[in-house]
Each structure stands twice: as structure tokens, then as C-alpha cells.
Amino acid sequence: MAHQVKLAAEQLRVLRGGREVLSGVSFEVAGGEVYGLLGGNGAGKSTTLSTFLGFLPVSGGRVIIVNTRDVGSDVAAARRAMAYLPEAAAMYEHLDARENLQYFLRLAGVVRGESEIDAALDRVSLAGDARGLKLRGYSKGMRQKVAIALAILRDTNILLLDEPTSGLDPTAIDEFHDLVRGLADAGKAILMVTHDVYGACQVADRIGLLRGGKLVDQFAAPAGGRIQTETVHRAFSAKTNP
Image 1 (cartoon, helix red, strand yellow):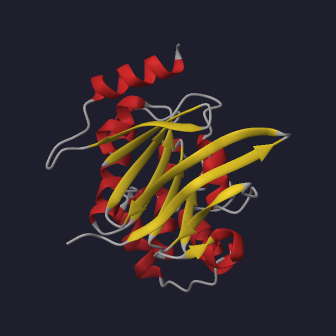
Image 2: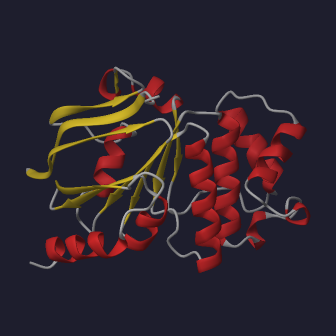
């Protein structure tokens, strides 16, 4: 049974400073799917993400959240439907994991009990003895787990991930990919922007390759398998090193 499309770009164009930084980009992400938007520096990945979040105006085409809602027509509603994980999640250093989650949930108007918060922290495998520690002593991998727990507790159908494994060690990267895969398998639609070819191939169902603001290639994982890293790496290298 096919999953419903949760977010999509349709012939997306963005102008910044008189220069076209996105040129007719189109893709969609369904529930139960991880879509990796892959590209080098300046390819347009973060710009694409910013249009979904309503941070940048669209010059042409449109970005859609949950079937037919155009982000430009109702930014607040679109943001409520999504959870966003930046490269460096901003949280309060003087609060512990539970306190941070309670604070940000209140800001989002979401009420969750202590047992639900602990269940989310269990799901992201944050050690029990770390939950009462101030975040100033957390590694980046631990912070990412808290941020993902927040996304779980907000219970949105869509997750936007911006270079989520940058700076993580290999073990933390594998744990993060397993977590993201589990969320997708539970029905979430996940858009992950990254420059990491290997990581994208490990976790994504489909990959779109951006270069110079254009979607120049797309790759799909075979049934029960993964996208071939060598294939994507060759395309990435050819496109970014003419």
C-alpha cells in the first residue's frame, strides 16, 4: 500500500541577490520514506530546506506540506506539521535532558507526562544516568538524541534534518541512522540534507543530487536493499568536479 506524500517541491525557484540559487527543483517525500538531498557546498541544499520552513520566499513553483498545503499560504500551520533538526541543535546548557524537553514542548503547546518523556528518551537510547545531567556536559551525539526525542514527543509526521551527522563519531552516526530508519518505518516522512554520500546511501530510500541549484540525478534503493554507494559517489564526483 502506497504511503501518502507528506512534502514536495514543485518546480521550485529561488532568487537571492538577483541570482537564481534554485532552478526548477522537484521532488516529493512520502510517509515511511527517507529522502536524502545530497550535494556539495553551495549546491542549494540549505536553501531548499529554508523554503520548506518558510524562511525564504519562493520566486517560482511551490513547496507543499501534507498533501495540498502550500507553505507560502500558511507558514505557521506548515511549521506545526514539521519537526526540524539543525546541524547544531540549540538547547539550554544549564538544563538537563528532561528539563529541555519540557521547556520546548511547552513552547510548542504540547503537553507530555514524565513517563512519555522517558519513553521517548528510551527510544533514542539516551542512557538513564545521563538524563539528569546538564547539557553542558553532553557530546554532540547525546544532544542529537535529545533533539530527536523532542521530535518524537511533538509527534509530527514530517522531520527535516540538516546535516544531522556532521561531527559525530562513527558509532554515533550508525546509531543515528538506525533511529532515523526506525522513525521512517513507523510512517514518518524524513527529508535529510547532507554532503555525506556514504551516510545518505546507508539510510535513504531515495537520493536527489543537487548541483548549482538543479536536481541533476535521483537514485532509488532496490526492494530490500540499499542504494549503491559507488554509483552515487561517481555521479557526485562527476557533477561537482567538471
